[in-house]
Amino acid sequence: MKFTEILEDFVFLFYPNYCRGCSESLVKGEKIICTRCMLDLPKSNYHLERDNPFYLKFSGRIPVKFVMTLFKFVKQGKVQHLLHALKYKNQPEIGVQLGRVYGADLVNEKYKDQFDVIVPVPLHESKKRKRGYNQSEEFGKGLSEVLEIPCTEKFLKRTRATSTQTKKSKLNRWENVSEVFEVEQKEELKGKRILLVDDVVTTGATLEACGQKLLEAGCGDVSIACIAATQ
Image (cartoon, rainbow, N blue to C red; front, side, top):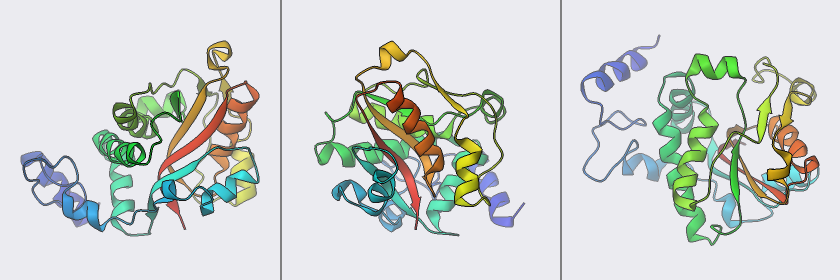
């Protein structure tokens, strides 16, 4: 374990109201991430541009309505630091807070009435039990609070565990996830405008596989929102 991680754990033990981005104390009105870090984080602003790079990437593969991400992913940057804490250091509150932040951005740009339900990319049950939560669902919960629409895992299920996508090629990523998702409660799903959410989008193979299953099941349309996108 790196010294900075040991220091973070020590600070959190005695001073739980510290910024998850820089480990400084939060001031009144700040939650989870301080104002300075929020200003420093590299926002993508993809919700301001319909034909953004990730919308164009997905639109050639599946019919998507909107594709949006909160941040640009920079290696060794604060976004990666926050995502690592969200996924591996038992800090689901980071996902919820980032969902609230992005939800406010989407409301300001008149997206509030564009979706009926938020559907997180599911984890396999074994991985969710081990981690204790689904990081994508935590992001969805924050969005749900602000957009005032439900976030639910009941429509999409991961039928088997898959190996990590991190070092796979684009083709191997697709082969790894193409047949691992199933849609449930199809009648209730029909006609629904889905906001599919995940933590990080790289090649988009997982999101594409989920989106295809939802569209085949008869949902109205699929949009995508993620915490961060690799460049």
